[in-house]
Amino acid sequence: GDVFGGGDFNINFAVNVGDVNGDGTVDFVDFTPVLAATGSTAAGGSPYSVFADQNFDGTIDFVDFTPILGNTGNMVPASFPGALSGLSPEGEGSDEADGESYESSVDVALGDFFN
Image (cartoon, rainbow, N blue to C red; front, side, top):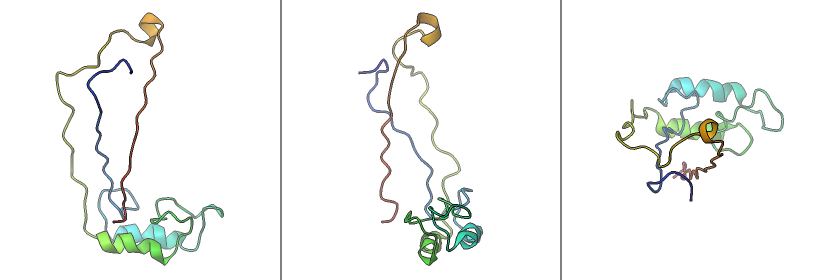
């Protein structure tokens, strides 16, 4: 029960396991941040990077190179399908116009990235 009808809302996430630098492609450039942070821990701070910690164990080590090696050459699609035209949320007005406050939530389920 929120003010927006239409059922579930689905969104695509462009996630490419091993893409440490976030450019959409897993390649040799993704080794650099992992190599620079090797030996660091989440508790120890910099140079630790959550992006370089590919297995999310809090320590950057040789295991974090595995997703890069296994996915080298993978790329995310250049674009995703756009929004459906002609659809709008139910209800009219806004917080400013009618003084109402609307709340909604989004549930996001991220799958198992390490098949």
